[in-house]
Image (cartoon, rainbow, N blue to C red; front, side):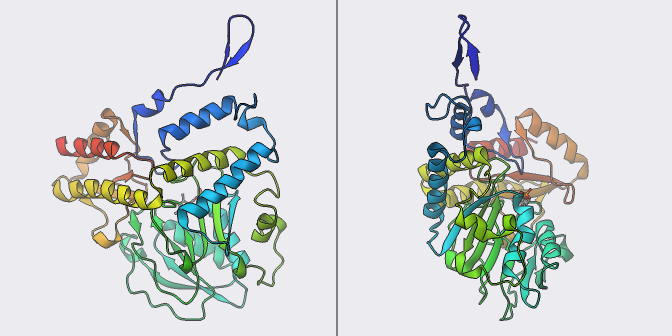
Length: 372
Ligand SMILES: *Cc1c(COP(=O)(O)O)cnc(C)c1O
């Protein structure tokens, strides 16, 4: 913040983080970020690295920002164990653009990719991929309003890749294990990136919109196996060709400077907490606290009955008596627990408990449930 010092001079003033800490933020996305990250981001808007300039007004080609980009890439590689066989890209257009960009880059018209349909985001990915090649829907949980993850999926050989949504933000389901396939997996990890360790050898492409578990809206992470590229026959628009962004280290055009910076700060924070291994334990612990209360409390029931399908990121539940819905949301609000209302296509409640969510906030919600 800039403040006038009383002598006609403007001085830089770093705001306090206190206002951010007042509420327990259960929103699904854009979502909670660690308090120290918000504090550092706010300070960088005033004065970035002592430059006397805001991060919002410096060149994306300045050494200071290039250092941010390099550190962001290095942190992705370190946190997830990403080898040099993969490129790490910071793109725009959201995860929704990756639905078609992935197919455009990886699937020829005369080839087929497998898709697993576990929710609204999967369905959108399927719709887009059909414009570029054959789509074989290998399994779907649509029959149960997407309240489970299909098991023992039969995956034929000869597929170009197999696409799945790792965590279904809306429906509260998550792949606990990734299926065995000959083909590389293409995974939408928007709502779970950095929440657990990954078997990188199974993946050809991972993409994630930042605004759930990694940073603010505006940047999309893509981790792509380089040997899969350059094989499609179609002409790719320059901006939609992964190779363009690989060649220019995500700076072919102006990258989303601030979202990348805040994502980098969040990754630093994840690393400082002990990395994704520590996140995994922390997330399992928080989710258990909440699911245990859902299963114990006679006023509530989980919308995902099969425990193996339950998401550790988005916990969906509903009132046993529909008349309790609004009073419960009111009780949450009164206790400072915000964003608990479920997605309109599922109803009920959804508590998004991403990496940055402290256990104390989950406990606050559990306390509301207990006394309800
Ligand atoms: C939010 C979300 C998306 C959409 O991301 P945008 O960045 O808004 O395009 C896609 N997939 C999943 C799993 C999501 O949670």
